[in-house]
Image 1 (tube, rainbow, N blue to C red):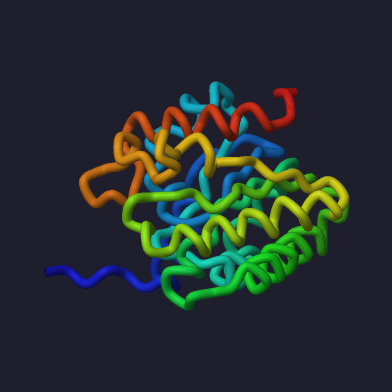
Image 2 (cartoon, rainbow, N blue to C red):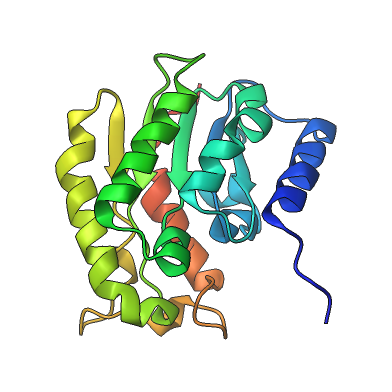
Length: 202
């Protein structure tokens, strides 16, 4: 079995691909972990050519902070979407307070050179794989809903409720065989939730 590339190796390879790709000017950047990395066609899904997916597998919010200058800052986004956090809970049993603090740190890193950069944060997304962690996901989302609106030009996008079934559990219909990553129907629901909160195209 081939070893999975390290976070650093993935980030470096992604940075190289971004440098070699012709990207839109002043893009909307969705930044996060494997759900972003595996997004088949972000521009088509969101119905706009100015969207760029910047994701690497297994990334935590702490990784997103560490690699922001390498991966996102050179793109000079006009709008940033943060799509990470579940890996923090899975890997480190991170508390809601820790996740909130790291999101605030990431927003601060993004605004060091772009003080007026508007930001959207995705709630933690439920998945059948994360069944034992559903209480932690809910607690984190509740804290984000309470605290993030206090920050200027920060909005919260709910990607929790759209992925629940009638019993309030993660709906397996939206997930691949691993019950962790999204399938085609999942990406449709994910894209619809995000697209509704983006600024209009220029």
